[in-house]
Length: 167
Image (cartoon, rainbow, N blue to C red; front, side, top):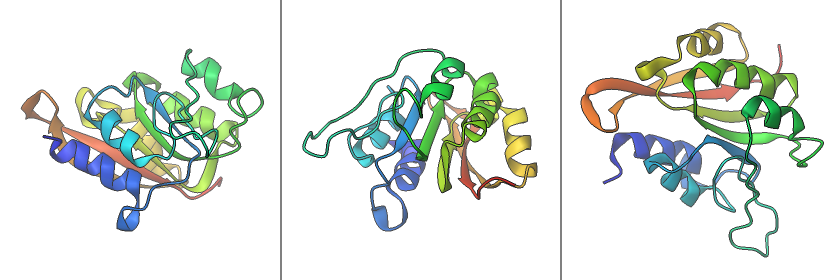
């Protein structure tokens, strides 16, 4: 059973009318939960941390980049050839969400109209990330209310950000 959390991630990942998003994208975090499986099915070339389609002839052409996000993000363009991400899924240390979003911006890695999904923004929470996303003027921000995966009584949410470009 995928549940609401997986349905939200899957609908956003697959886009309007359930079209798959562009191949350039990334997943920060283990990507091993329900969302990882749902997103993996909707992203061409698969998912995984900083997964991206590499070779259209290869069904599951995924480049797995392992390392601290503060070291990996600045190298994505030059070392790994990612020009712009159209989809980013964050499910790692919540206290790093804001720093990593700002790193993506600083390195000009977000395409205009890119979608950034951030899990668990209510519990355990990422208040500084949410405040920035809602007030900086660069994003449209919607929080999809869910509950914690393993404790349905605990309210949670997935933030869906749409990048409008630098301001």
